[in-house]
Image 1: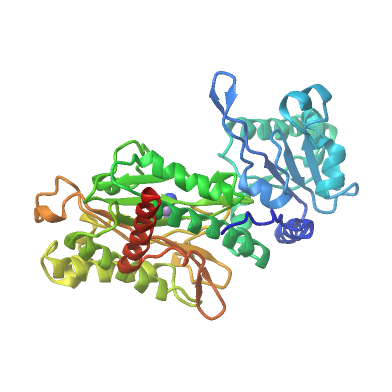
Image 2: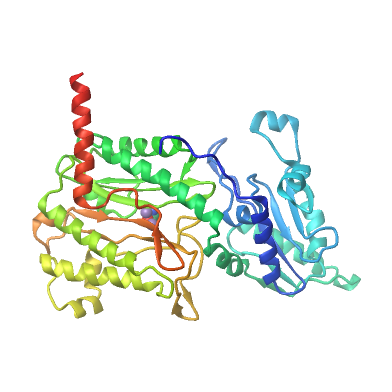
Length: 455
Ligand code: GLY
Ligand code: MN
Ligand code: MN
Protein backbone atom coordinates (compact mmCIF):
# COMPACT_ATOMS: atom_id res chain seq x y z
CA UNK A 1 0.00 0.00 0.00
CA UNK A 2 1.67 3.24 -1.09
CA UNK A 3 -0.98 5.78 -0.16
CA UNK A 4 -2.96 6.07 3.04
CA UNK A 5 -6.60 5.22 2.33
CA UNK A 6 -9.27 7.86 2.44
CA UNK A 7 -10.37 7.81 6.09
CA UNK A 8 -13.83 6.47 5.56
CA UNK A 9 -16.13 6.51 8.54
CA UNK A 10 -19.26 4.44 8.81
CA UNK A 11 -22.28 6.32 7.50
CA UNK A 12 -24.52 7.92 10.15
CA UNK A 13 -27.40 5.77 9.00
CA UNK A 14 -25.54 2.62 10.00
CA UNK A 15 -25.33 3.83 13.61
CA UNK A 16 -29.03 4.73 13.49
CA UNK A 17 -29.89 1.27 12.16
CA UNK A 18 -27.95 -0.36 14.99
CA UNK A 19 -29.82 1.68 17.61
CA UNK A 20 -33.14 0.85 15.95
CA UNK A 21 -32.27 -2.85 15.78
CA UNK A 22 -31.28 -2.93 19.44
CA UNK A 23 -34.41 -1.06 20.55
CA UNK A 24 -36.58 -3.42 18.50
CA UNK A 25 -35.10 -6.39 20.39
CA UNK A 26 -35.46 -4.86 23.87
CA UNK A 27 -38.39 -5.98 26.01
CA UNK A 28 -41.33 -3.57 26.13
CA UNK A 29 -41.06 -0.61 28.50
CA UNK A 30 -37.32 -0.82 29.02
CA UNK A 31 -34.30 1.49 28.83
CA UNK A 32 -30.65 0.87 27.88
CA UNK A 33 -27.72 2.71 29.45
CA UNK A 34 -24.17 2.62 28.04
CA UNK A 35 -21.32 4.67 29.59
CA UNK A 36 -18.31 5.83 27.60
CA UNK A 37 -14.88 4.40 28.42
CA UNK A 38 -13.05 6.09 31.27
CA UNK A 39 -9.85 8.07 30.85
CA UNK A 40 -6.99 6.09 32.41
CA UNK A 41 -4.07 7.77 34.12
CA UNK A 42 -0.69 6.57 32.85
CA UNK A 43 1.41 8.41 35.38
CA UNK A 44 0.82 11.55 37.43
CA UNK A 45 -0.94 14.01 35.09
CA UNK A 46 -0.39 12.03 31.89
CA UNK A 47 -3.22 9.90 30.59
CA UNK A 48 -3.15 6.89 28.31
CA UNK A 49 -4.31 7.66 24.78
CA UNK A 50 -8.09 7.61 24.99
CA UNK A 51 -9.92 4.87 23.16
CA UNK A 52 -13.71 4.85 23.24
CA UNK A 53 -15.52 1.74 24.52
CA UNK A 54 -16.43 -0.50 21.57
CA UNK A 55 -20.10 -0.89 22.55
CA UNK A 56 -20.44 2.85 23.00
CA UNK A 57 -18.84 3.70 19.66
CA UNK A 58 -20.83 0.93 17.95
CA UNK A 59 -24.06 2.63 18.90
CA UNK A 60 -23.02 6.27 18.64
CA UNK A 61 -19.82 6.92 16.68
CA UNK A 62 -19.11 9.42 19.49
CA UNK A 63 -15.42 9.43 20.45
CA UNK A 64 -15.30 11.69 23.51
CA UNK A 65 -14.92 10.55 27.12
CA UNK A 66 -17.31 11.53 29.94
CA UNK A 67 -20.43 10.59 28.03
CA UNK A 68 -23.43 8.34 28.61
CA UNK A 69 -25.72 6.96 25.92
CA UNK A 70 -29.35 6.21 26.75
CA UNK A 71 -31.90 4.45 24.56
CA UNK A 72 -35.44 4.96 25.78
CA UNK A 73 -37.81 3.45 23.20
CA UNK A 74 -41.02 5.45 22.85
CA UNK A 75 -39.78 8.48 24.81
CA UNK A 76 -41.77 11.48 23.70
CA UNK A 77 -38.84 13.93 23.50
CA UNK A 78 -36.63 11.48 21.67
CA UNK A 79 -35.50 7.90 22.11
CA UNK A 80 -31.77 8.44 21.69
CA UNK A 81 -30.32 10.59 24.46
CA UNK A 82 -26.66 11.52 24.80
CA UNK A 83 -25.04 13.08 27.86
CA UNK A 84 -21.66 14.67 27.10
CA UNK A 85 -19.21 17.39 28.09
CA UNK A 86 -20.29 20.95 27.48
CA UNK A 87 -18.35 23.15 25.11
CA UNK A 88 -15.76 25.14 27.03
CA UNK A 89 -13.41 27.58 25.30
CA UNK A 90 -10.61 27.30 27.86
CA UNK A 91 -10.72 23.52 28.05
CA UNK A 92 -10.85 23.26 24.27
CA UNK A 93 -7.74 25.46 23.93
CA UNK A 94 -5.84 23.15 26.29
CA UNK A 95 -7.28 19.73 25.50
CA UNK A 96 -9.07 19.80 22.18
CA UNK A 97 -12.44 20.13 20.56
CA UNK A 98 -15.68 19.12 22.27
CA UNK A 99 -18.99 18.51 20.54
CA UNK A 100 -21.18 19.68 23.38
CA UNK A 101 -24.86 18.67 23.56
CA UNK A 102 -25.51 20.84 20.46
CA UNK A 103 -22.96 18.83 18.46
CA UNK A 104 -24.33 15.55 19.84
CA UNK A 105 -27.67 16.40 18.24
CA UNK A 106 -26.35 18.02 15.08
CA UNK A 107 -23.44 15.72 14.22
CA UNK A 108 -24.29 12.48 15.99
CA UNK A 109 -28.04 12.38 15.46
CA UNK A 110 -28.97 12.30 19.15
CA UNK A 111 -32.66 13.10 19.57
CA UNK A 112 -31.91 14.89 22.80
CA UNK A 113 -28.65 15.77 24.57
CA UNK A 114 -27.66 17.13 27.99
CA UNK A 115 -24.46 18.21 29.76
CA UNK A 116 -22.84 15.27 31.56
CA UNK A 117 -22.98 17.32 34.77
CA UNK A 118 -26.78 17.02 34.71
CA UNK A 119 -26.72 13.21 34.64
CA UNK A 120 -27.70 12.71 38.30
CA UNK A 121 -30.55 15.10 37.93
CA UNK A 122 -31.98 13.80 34.65
CA UNK A 123 -31.25 10.08 34.39
CA UNK A 124 -33.47 8.92 37.31
CA UNK A 125 -36.35 10.64 35.55
CA UNK A 126 -35.60 8.69 32.36
CA UNK A 127 -35.43 5.38 34.27
CA UNK A 128 -38.53 6.04 36.36
CA UNK A 129 -41.55 4.17 35.01
CA UNK A 130 -39.49 1.72 32.93
CA UNK A 131 -39.83 -1.90 34.01
CA UNK A 132 -36.40 -3.08 32.85
CA UNK A 133 -32.92 -1.61 32.61
CA UNK A 134 -30.49 -3.00 30.03
CA UNK A 135 -27.02 -2.43 31.40
CA UNK A 136 -23.67 -4.27 31.30
CA UNK A 137 -22.95 -4.65 35.01
CA UNK A 138 -19.37 -5.21 36.19
CA UNK A 139 -17.34 -3.31 33.60
CA UNK A 140 -17.14 0.01 35.45
CA UNK A 141 -17.68 -0.48 39.21
CA UNK A 142 -18.05 3.25 39.85
CA UNK A 143 -20.72 3.61 37.21
CA UNK A 144 -22.43 0.42 38.51
CA UNK A 145 -22.80 2.17 41.87
CA UNK A 146 -24.19 5.27 40.19
CA UNK A 147 -26.81 3.20 38.36
CA UNK A 148 -27.81 1.57 41.65
CA UNK A 149 -27.99 5.01 43.30
CA UNK A 150 -30.38 6.24 40.61
CA UNK A 151 -32.58 3.19 41.04
CA UNK A 152 -32.50 3.62 44.84
CA UNK A 153 -33.43 7.27 44.43
CA UNK A 154 -36.55 6.16 42.56
CA UNK A 155 -37.24 3.39 45.11
CA UNK A 156 -37.12 5.93 47.92
CA UNK A 157 -39.97 7.75 46.25
CA UNK A 158 -42.40 4.85 45.78
CA UNK A 159 -44.72 6.26 48.43
CA UNK A 160 -45.07 9.36 46.31
CA UNK A 161 -46.07 7.22 43.34
CA UNK A 162 -42.64 6.62 41.73
CA UNK A 163 -42.26 3.45 39.71
CA UNK A 164 -38.78 1.83 40.03
CA UNK A 165 -37.59 -0.77 37.51
CA UNK A 166 -38.01 -4.36 38.65
CA UNK A 167 -35.35 -5.99 36.52
CA UNK A 168 -31.80 -5.53 35.26
CA UNK A 169 -30.97 -7.29 32.00
CA UNK A 170 -27.45 -7.80 30.68
CA UNK A 171 -27.12 -5.59 27.62
CA UNK A 172 -24.13 -7.58 26.33
CA UNK A 173 -26.22 -10.48 25.20
CA UNK A 174 -28.21 -8.56 22.57
CA UNK A 175 -25.54 -6.06 21.62
CA UNK A 176 -22.71 -8.53 21.29
CA UNK A 177 -24.71 -10.81 19.06
CA UNK A 178 -25.29 -7.83 16.77
CA UNK A 179 -21.58 -7.03 16.77
CA UNK A 180 -20.72 -10.59 15.79
CA UNK A 181 -22.24 -10.12 12.32
CA UNK A 182 -20.32 -7.60 10.24
CA UNK A 183 -22.06 -5.42 7.67
CA UNK A 184 -20.58 -4.63 4.24
CA UNK A 185 -19.30 -1.28 5.52
CA UNK A 186 -17.69 -2.91 8.55
CA UNK A 187 -16.01 -5.53 6.38
CA UNK A 188 -14.54 -2.73 4.26
CA UNK A 189 -13.00 -1.18 7.38
CA UNK A 190 -11.71 -4.56 8.52
CA UNK A 191 -10.18 -5.16 5.10
CA UNK A 192 -8.44 -1.78 5.35
CA UNK A 193 -7.08 -2.65 8.82
CA UNK A 194 -5.94 -5.97 7.35
CA UNK A 195 -4.26 -4.31 4.33
CA UNK A 196 -2.32 -1.93 6.59
CA UNK A 197 -1.20 -4.81 8.75
CA UNK A 198 -0.20 -6.85 5.71
CA UNK A 199 2.01 -3.94 4.61
CA UNK A 200 3.56 -3.83 8.10
CA UNK A 201 4.36 -7.55 8.14
CA UNK A 202 5.91 -7.44 4.68
CA UNK A 203 8.08 -4.48 5.69
CA UNK A 204 9.20 -6.34 8.82
CA UNK A 205 10.28 -9.34 6.71
CA UNK A 206 12.12 -7.04 4.32
CA UNK A 207 14.10 -5.09 6.90
CA UNK A 208 14.85 -7.89 9.36
CA UNK A 209 18.57 -8.61 9.88
CA UNK A 210 20.60 -10.37 12.57
CA UNK A 211 21.72 -7.93 15.25
CA UNK A 212 18.55 -5.84 15.20
CA UNK A 213 16.61 -5.47 18.42
CA UNK A 214 13.08 -6.85 18.62
CA UNK A 215 11.77 -3.33 19.31
CA UNK A 216 13.40 -2.05 16.14
CA UNK A 217 11.36 -4.55 14.15
CA UNK A 218 8.31 -3.43 16.12
CA UNK A 219 9.10 0.18 15.13
CA UNK A 220 9.29 -0.75 11.44
CA UNK A 221 5.93 -2.40 11.74
CA UNK A 222 4.31 0.56 13.50
CA UNK A 223 5.87 2.98 11.04
CA UNK A 224 4.29 1.17 8.14
CA UNK A 225 0.74 0.94 9.37
CA UNK A 226 0.75 4.43 10.83
CA UNK A 227 1.97 5.71 7.47
CA UNK A 228 -0.99 3.89 5.95
CA UNK A 229 -3.52 5.70 8.18
CA UNK A 230 -3.86 3.62 11.34
CA UNK A 231 -3.60 5.60 14.58
CA UNK A 232 -2.88 2.67 16.86
CA UNK A 233 -2.05 -1.00 16.95
CA UNK A 234 -5.12 -3.09 17.76
CA UNK A 235 -3.23 -4.71 20.69
CA UNK A 236 0.27 -4.72 22.09
CA UNK A 237 2.65 -5.90 19.40
CA UNK A 238 4.55 -9.13 20.02
CA UNK A 239 8.02 -9.51 18.53
CA UNK A 240 9.74 -12.58 19.91
CA UNK A 241 13.09 -13.77 18.59
CA UNK A 242 14.27 -17.36 19.21
CA UNK A 243 12.86 -18.88 22.40
CA UNK A 244 10.91 -15.65 23.11
CA UNK A 245 8.58 -16.89 20.38
CA UNK A 246 7.53 -19.65 22.81
CA UNK A 247 6.05 -17.08 25.24
CA UNK A 248 2.53 -16.66 23.94
CA UNK A 249 2.01 -13.05 25.04
CA UNK A 250 5.64 -11.85 24.99
CA UNK A 251 5.59 -8.04 24.79
CA UNK A 252 8.96 -6.99 26.23
CA UNK A 253 10.37 -6.93 22.70
CA UNK A 254 13.79 -5.92 24.03
CA UNK A 255 16.15 -8.73 22.99
CA UNK A 256 18.57 -8.92 20.09
CA UNK A 257 17.61 -10.95 17.03
CA UNK A 258 20.14 -13.63 16.19
CA UNK A 259 21.08 -15.38 12.96
CA UNK A 260 19.83 -18.97 13.06
CA UNK A 261 16.74 -18.05 15.11
CA UNK A 262 13.18 -17.50 14.02
CA UNK A 263 11.28 -14.36 14.93
CA UNK A 264 7.55 -14.44 15.67
CA UNK A 265 5.62 -11.22 15.04
CA UNK A 266 2.00 -11.01 16.19
CA UNK A 267 0.80 -7.55 15.25
CA UNK A 268 -2.23 -5.83 13.79
CA UNK A 269 -3.42 -2.32 13.12
CA UNK A 270 -6.66 -0.80 14.31
CA UNK A 271 -8.52 1.27 11.74
CA UNK A 272 -11.66 3.24 12.55
CA UNK A 273 -12.16 1.02 15.63
CA UNK A 274 -11.74 -2.28 13.75
CA UNK A 275 -8.85 -4.67 14.37
CA UNK A 276 -6.57 -6.84 12.30
CA UNK A 277 -4.61 -9.64 13.97
CA UNK A 278 -1.80 -11.30 12.03
CA UNK A 279 1.08 -13.54 13.07
CA UNK A 280 4.00 -14.52 10.92
CA UNK A 281 7.12 -16.40 11.93
CA UNK A 282 10.24 -16.18 9.78
CA UNK A 283 14.01 -16.72 9.98
CA UNK A 284 16.00 -13.71 11.20
CA UNK A 285 18.63 -14.27 8.49
CA UNK A 286 16.14 -15.22 5.79
CA UNK A 287 16.81 -19.00 5.71
CA UNK A 288 14.94 -21.66 7.68
CA UNK A 289 17.05 -24.40 9.29
CA UNK A 290 15.87 -27.95 8.71
CA UNK A 291 14.12 -28.46 12.08
CA UNK A 292 12.57 -24.97 11.88
CA UNK A 293 11.28 -25.72 8.42
CA UNK A 294 9.83 -29.09 9.48
CA UNK A 295 7.82 -27.52 12.32
CA UNK A 296 6.92 -24.48 10.23
CA UNK A 297 5.48 -26.60 7.43
CA UNK A 298 3.48 -28.55 10.00
CA UNK A 299 1.93 -25.40 11.53
CA UNK A 300 1.14 -24.13 8.05
CA UNK A 301 -0.48 -27.43 7.08
CA UNK A 302 -2.64 -27.23 10.22
CA UNK A 303 -3.56 -23.61 9.51
CA UNK A 304 -4.58 -24.34 5.91
CA UNK A 305 -6.63 -27.34 7.03
CA UNK A 306 -8.43 -25.16 9.59
CA UNK A 307 -9.08 -22.36 7.09
CA UNK A 308 -10.73 -24.90 4.78
CA UNK A 309 -13.16 -25.69 7.61
CA UNK A 310 -14.38 -22.08 7.74
CA UNK A 311 -17.68 -21.93 5.89
CA UNK A 312 -21.35 -21.54 6.74
CA UNK A 313 -22.71 -24.57 8.52
CA UNK A 314 -19.45 -25.66 10.17
CA UNK A 315 -19.23 -25.46 13.95
CA UNK A 316 -17.00 -23.01 15.73
CA UNK A 317 -14.85 -25.89 16.96
CA UNK A 318 -14.31 -27.60 13.59
CA UNK A 319 -11.26 -25.51 12.58
CA UNK A 320 -9.71 -26.10 16.01
CA UNK A 321 -10.24 -29.84 15.74
CA UNK A 322 -8.63 -29.80 12.31
CA UNK A 323 -5.50 -28.15 13.75
CA UNK A 324 -5.31 -30.66 16.60
CA UNK A 325 -5.47 -33.60 14.19
CA UNK A 326 -2.83 -32.29 11.79
CA UNK A 327 -0.47 -31.16 14.56
CA UNK A 328 -0.73 -34.37 16.57
CA UNK A 329 -0.13 -36.51 13.50
CA UNK A 330 2.80 -34.35 12.44
CA UNK A 331 4.41 -34.32 15.89
CA UNK A 332 4.31 -38.11 15.93
CA UNK A 333 5.85 -38.28 12.45
CA UNK A 334 8.66 -35.96 13.57
CA UNK A 335 9.22 -37.90 16.81
CA UNK A 336 8.16 -35.17 19.28
CA UNK A 337 5.23 -37.32 20.45
CA UNK A 338 4.95 -41.07 20.59
CA UNK A 339 1.80 -43.14 20.73
CA UNK A 340 -1.46 -43.69 18.91
CA UNK A 341 -2.90 -40.54 17.28
CA UNK A 342 -6.43 -41.05 18.66
CA UNK A 343 -5.16 -41.60 22.19
CA UNK A 344 -2.81 -38.61 22.01
CA UNK A 345 -5.71 -36.44 20.89
CA UNK A 346 -8.01 -37.83 23.62
CA UNK A 347 -5.39 -37.20 26.32
CA UNK A 348 -4.56 -33.78 24.82
CA UNK A 349 -0.88 -34.72 24.66
CA UNK A 350 -0.43 -32.10 21.93
CA UNK A 351 -0.94 -29.39 24.57
CA UNK A 352 2.73 -29.77 25.55
CA UNK A 353 3.46 -27.95 22.26
CA UNK A 354 0.12 -26.42 21.22
CA UNK A 355 -1.58 -25.05 24.31
CA UNK A 356 -4.04 -22.50 22.93
CA UNK A 357 -7.09 -22.66 20.73
CA UNK A 358 -7.09 -22.13 16.98
CA UNK A 359 -8.68 -18.68 17.06
CA UNK A 360 -11.25 -16.18 18.28
CA UNK A 361 -13.84 -13.77 16.92
CA UNK A 362 -12.38 -10.58 15.48
CA UNK A 363 -14.00 -7.17 15.12
CA UNK A 364 -13.89 -3.92 17.06
CA UNK A 365 -12.05 -5.75 19.83
CA UNK A 366 -9.22 -8.04 18.88
CA UNK A 367 -10.71 -10.81 21.02
CA UNK A 368 -14.12 -9.78 19.88
CA UNK A 369 -17.48 -10.27 21.52
CA UNK A 370 -20.04 -12.94 20.66
CA UNK A 371 -20.89 -16.30 22.16
CA UNK A 372 -18.87 -19.34 21.11
CA UNK A 373 -21.56 -21.72 22.28
CA UNK A 374 -25.33 -21.44 21.99
CA UNK A 375 -27.53 -23.66 24.15
CA UNK A 376 -24.47 -25.68 25.17
CA UNK A 377 -23.50 -26.43 21.54
CA UNK A 378 -20.66 -24.94 19.50
CA UNK A 379 -21.94 -22.07 17.41
CA UNK A 380 -22.57 -22.64 13.72
CA UNK A 381 -20.57 -20.34 11.44
CA UNK A 382 -22.64 -17.87 9.43
CA UNK A 383 -21.98 -15.31 6.72
CA UNK A 384 -20.56 -12.04 8.08
CA UNK A 385 -18.68 -13.50 11.03
CA UNK A 386 -14.93 -12.85 11.17
CA UNK A 387 -12.51 -15.07 13.07
CA UNK A 388 -8.79 -15.69 13.32
CA UNK A 389 -7.11 -18.98 12.51
CA UNK A 390 -3.84 -19.19 14.41
CA UNK A 391 -2.38 -22.57 15.30
CA UNK A 392 1.14 -22.77 16.69
CA UNK A 393 3.84 -25.08 17.95
CA UNK A 394 6.07 -23.99 20.81
CA UNK A 395 8.88 -26.20 22.09
CA UNK A 396 10.08 -24.88 25.44
CA UNK A 397 13.85 -24.26 25.51
CA UNK A 398 14.18 -26.56 28.55
CA UNK A 399 11.96 -29.36 27.23
CA UNK A 400 14.28 -32.35 27.62
CA UNK A 401 11.59 -34.80 26.51
CA UNK A 402 12.47 -33.97 22.89
CA UNK A 403 15.63 -33.91 20.80
CA UNK A 404 17.73 -30.81 21.37
CA UNK A 405 17.32 -29.60 17.80
CA UNK A 406 13.64 -28.77 18.42
CA UNK A 407 14.08 -26.82 21.65
CA UNK A 408 13.36 -23.11 21.74
CA UNK A 409 11.47 -23.08 18.45
CA UNK A 410 8.19 -21.13 18.63
CA UNK A 411 5.96 -20.79 15.58
CA UNK A 412 2.50 -19.32 15.06
CA UNK A 413 0.79 -18.46 11.79
CA UNK A 414 -2.34 -16.32 12.05
CA UNK A 415 -4.80 -14.95 9.50
CA UNK A 416 -8.15 -13.19 9.66
CA UNK A 417 -10.98 -15.01 7.92
CA UNK A 418 -14.40 -13.73 6.90
CA UNK A 419 -17.22 -16.25 6.56
CA UNK A 420 -18.87 -15.61 3.18
CA UNK A 421 -22.11 -16.99 1.70
CA UNK A 422 -20.32 -19.86 0.01
CA UNK A 423 -17.15 -20.24 2.06
CA UNK A 424 -14.53 -17.83 3.27
CA UNK A 425 -12.29 -14.92 2.41
CA UNK A 426 -8.87 -14.60 4.03
CA UNK A 427 -8.58 -10.85 4.64
CA UNK A 428 -4.85 -11.06 5.40
CA UNK A 429 -3.75 -13.29 2.53
CA UNK A 430 -1.29 -10.65 1.29
CA UNK A 431 1.51 -11.61 3.69
CA UNK A 432 3.49 -14.58 2.35
CA UNK A 433 3.34 -17.68 4.52
CA UNK A 434 4.74 -20.51 2.39
CA UNK A 435 8.31 -20.93 3.68
CA UNK A 436 9.73 -20.71 0.13
CA UNK A 437 7.86 -17.48 -0.55
CA UNK A 438 9.16 -15.93 2.68
CA UNK A 439 12.73 -16.90 1.78
CA UNK A 440 12.34 -15.43 -1.71
CA UNK A 441 10.95 -12.16 -0.33
CA UNK A 442 13.71 -11.84 2.26
CA UNK A 443 16.45 -12.74 -0.24
CA UNK A 444 15.20 -10.06 -2.64
CA UNK A 445 15.31 -7.46 0.15
CA UNK A 446 18.82 -8.57 1.16
CA UNK A 447 20.01 -8.29 -2.46
CA UNK A 448 18.52 -4.81 -2.70
CA UNK A 449 20.34 -3.78 0.49
CA UNK A 450 23.66 -5.08 -0.83
CA UNK A 451 23.19 -3.17 -4.07
CA UNK A 452 22.48 0.02 -2.17
CA UNK A 453 25.55 -0.45 0.03
CA UNK A 454 27.75 -0.71 -3.09
CA UNK A 455 26.45 2.60 -4.51
N1 GLY B 1 -2.81 -11.05 19.29
C1 GLY B 1 -3.53 -11.82 20.20
C2 GLY B 1 -4.04 -13.03 19.59
O1 GLY B 1 -3.57 -13.44 18.56
O2 GLY B 1 -4.98 -13.61 20.06
MN1 MN C 1 -5.42 -13.74 17.51
MN1 MN D 1 -2.50 -12.37 17.16
